[in-house]
Length: 106
Image (cartoon, rainbow, N blue to C red):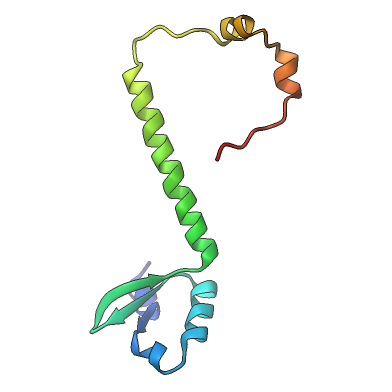
């Protein structure tokens, strides 16, 4: 984001006192994040609900990635159990896995 782009995204807090809130919110939805200035210093950032959800999901995915990397590092050099052995022990066939519905973890 260039300097001109950042300047276009600045919103003085006094704009809210002048009744421009609905315009500001629409601008955040269409143009992206806006930076609210109070006393010429950044005070807050306004993003659309969709952008907030996207950022929250990205943050959650990053935390999961870090956790997976830590687990892989902790288990490095340890012998694993082949999936075929686990499936046999649990009595699960490849056909049953193929027929199973996808599960979404929350």
